[in-house]
Image 1 (cartoon, rainbow, N blue to C red):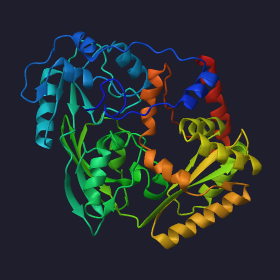
Image 2: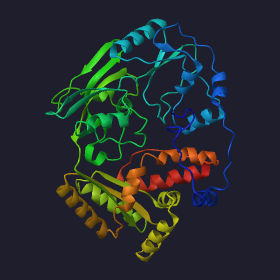
Image 3: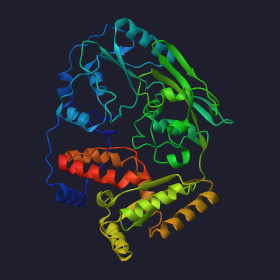
Image 4: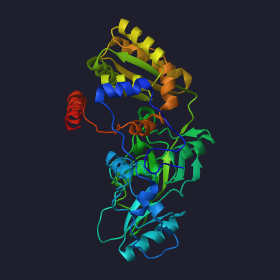
Length: 424
């Protein structure tokens, strides 16, 4: 069962170690845990639905609460305190594009606002219900999740837009393929959500961001069905895919999506490299990115994030040995960790890794092997569960994402940290 007021599955916990709690106390001060509202408390505040009865719409308070908010920090505060605010008047669970069309027609005639709902992982307010006189219908795509067609020659796969990341990969892997799109929210976000929000994955350097993977599909709009055929490139005119990418549900509801898939890679590996400070690290990553080596991932953490990750990872003795070794190699308190990933056929992948490590060494990087990379891969979708563990001890975790040119990376990062520290 998915948590109603936190991240992920209720049965999965990620407890903070004593060392992690001591670190948080030293950096941030003592936590101030609060008493969470119960699910029953939240449901008791839900007003009666303003929707006329419909066979596809569930108006029970429990269902409406579970579809009212996303995973942003403001959402968390509302959920944890039980002050949900406005909730959808009902939730529909169509199992076909035809039923989506029927629901949109119902909404049009009844003057009902519609909010598409994928995995509910939005951190940008996409699911927030605006208080007002119009009833609101949350339209869940979770039943549109099957692999409809796989074109092996063109390497195209067509799915229902409500398919969750793990289910999508499992269906593809049964046929020897992968999409290779792994956002942090992978376990609970959907293909349609990735497309509607222009998602980027942890291995987009190899497989591409979602705009490179999205080949076509079908969108149900209030005016009818928009069919976007697949084609390898646009020779003229407007690319209709761009109207859907990042549209966040404004244009209509994506019910079916065709994506470009790849054969499962025979070889995949992630290696950790440390640099003495941010200046060296950023210069190395820029050189690696601009060299266009066939890597699948470059993931750089600044000094504070590196220190935080090493502390929260546990394994105190092993981390202590690592830090003593790095100190001898000139990587002290200001050290920054870079994760380098390769994926594909073994020979070219290993050649790309050798090239990347050689370039990193020219920027004074210290390669510590793949053990940390293996651990990162094993837990890369569990780290987000730290939000639950931290909350229990009175700390909150949020995420911020942006994009700037190379010359503005360091000033932007410093300004964000300074603004955050000043505000909090």
